[in-house]
Every structure is written in structure tokens, then in C-alpha cells.
Image 1 (cartoon, rainbow, N blue to C red):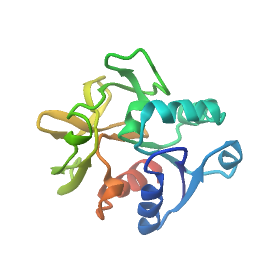
Image 2 (cartoon, one colour; image 1 turned 60 degrees about the vertical axis):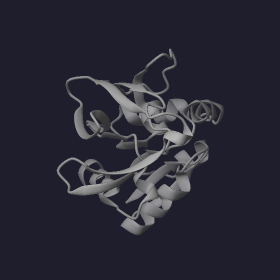
Image 3 (cartoon, one colour; image 1 turned 45 degrees about the vertical axis):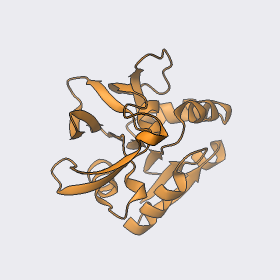
Image 4 (tube, helix red, strand yellow; image 1 turned 30 degrees about the vertical axis):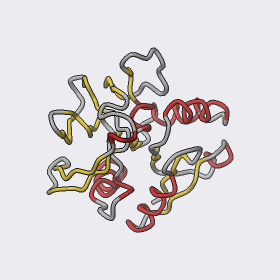
Amino acid sequence: MRVGVLALQGGFAEHLRSLARWGAEGIQIRNRTDMAKGFDALIIPGGESTTIGKLVKQAGLYEPILALIASGLPVFGTCAGMILLASTIENDSTVHFGTFPITVKRNAFGRQLGSFHAIGKFGESAAVPMTFIRAPVITKAADPVRVLTEINGHIVAAQYGKLLVTAFHPELTDDLTVHDYFLNNLVR
């Protein structure tokens, strides 16, 4: 299984390490040539969503990625990746890919000092370690969206068809539960 990881900014290296530990081949996606290599799924990592959104367009990747999402490619967005996939961002008219029918609120737990670790249930799985860094939350989810995780009454993980989003960073822990869920349930 080959998984593309958008490698323009943010935590792409950590996702590549998690994929290798899981047994999948991870490939960095930086330009259209990388897109032509072919892959079974895509991860959009955490980082700074505005910066990643601009870099995606500058690299000529916006239209190809949007077309792949529309064709059913499984995509996993963490933190900034969740913001990029969201159809609505609170207090911001910007829409990046807009393919996931949710409203997100940036920095919902505060700025960098609001970063924290938690243990929570992910879908049907047992407790999973979660690292939140300037994390967004989902404030509204359309009816077909499946909520997978809530922390302190905030939605922090959800699935919509072959799209998965988390406000936390599973790639920053040794636990592969979330990557396993994505690869076994949405990709295979």
C-alpha cells in the first residue's frame, strides 16, 4: 500500500514514520511529478493551515488533489489538514478543499500554551493517546458525518465517507490506532 503525504509544511515526517511502522510505503507529495507516482491514499498533516493552503496552490497541487478527493481517494487530515478539508471555518471566509461537511474553529483550546495531551476513545477502540497543538475543533457536523471522538464536549475526530479528520496528532505518539483505522477501514 502506498500513501502520499503532503510534504509542503508541517508534520509530514512524523506521518511518514508512522506509515513505515505500520508497514505502508509513504511517499512525499511536493509537486505534480510526485502526484504522478500514484498512491492509494493521502495524508494532509498538521502545520499552519493558511501556509499549507497557499503552498498547495503555488505548487499546482490544489486542482489535482481536489479531483482525487472527488474521485473517492481516501484522505486523512490531522489538525491543519482538518481545517483544509472543512467546508466552513468559523470567522473566516476562506475555504480550502471544502470537501468535508463540517465547521471548524481554529485554536479552540488556545494558542501554543493551550497545547495538551489527553487519553480518549477513538471510535470503537480503547483509550488512545492524543496530542493537541493549537488544535481546532469541529463545532458543526452535517448529518452524514460520523463523530469518532469527543474531548470535553468538543468533537475532535470524524469520518465522512473515505475522509478522516482529527484535531489531534496521532503521528506524535507510538500508538498506531488511528493510522490503522484509516488504512484498514478507509483505504483497503
